[in-house]
Length: 222
Ligand SMILES: *Cc1c(COP(=O)(O)O)cnc(C)c1O
Image (cartoon, rainbow, N blue to C red; front, top):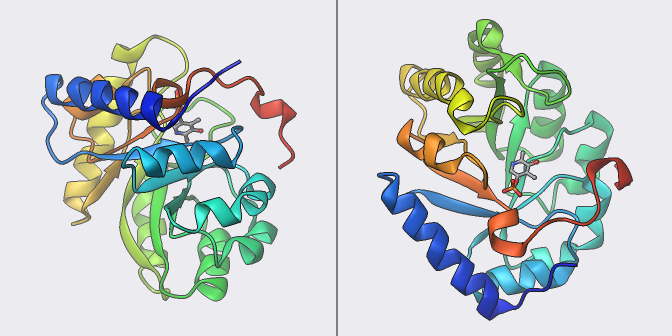
């Protein structure tokens, strides 16, 4: 069981800042990933000074909407088109746009919303994201919509350890620059040093702030 409080999260946040600084990062935004924890994780994160929280599951986020109100809410999970409507007044940044239909739906339900396109830089199944080869076409489409495209997001590989993530992170950062975007969301508890070294501007961190998650993805109501 994980236990945490505003104090424990604050201490963990200090360590996280130190890790980011040691990896050469300055001005790296921290999104506190509160998935699978109750609303008290969001409250502790806010009390500890985090401004942004990340959630993966639509139903779960809707259940925590009250606690999430005071935060900048980033949706970081794979998103079904039919879930967008109920998230429209909760989510501030959609990080996982990876297909035209999803972009269309967000533009319709949350016009003007800030979005990131999720890039699949590993080819591992089940993570979502548009392959790099198809990125420009999706960017072009999103730019025709009433959306504020601010950056790219990617998830490092599960296999191979943190160093295996470096080439993918590097190509996503290069794409951010080439496309004239500003946000590069990459790096989690296990690979944030590599991500920061490769130019991440935003890490999404759960375990290092709140401890291990007890429930797993497959337990989740999606
Ligand atoms: C769960 C999750 C995170 C946080 O992972 P930790 O290893 O707990 O830091 C970050 N990004 C995404 C997309 C996630 O699903």
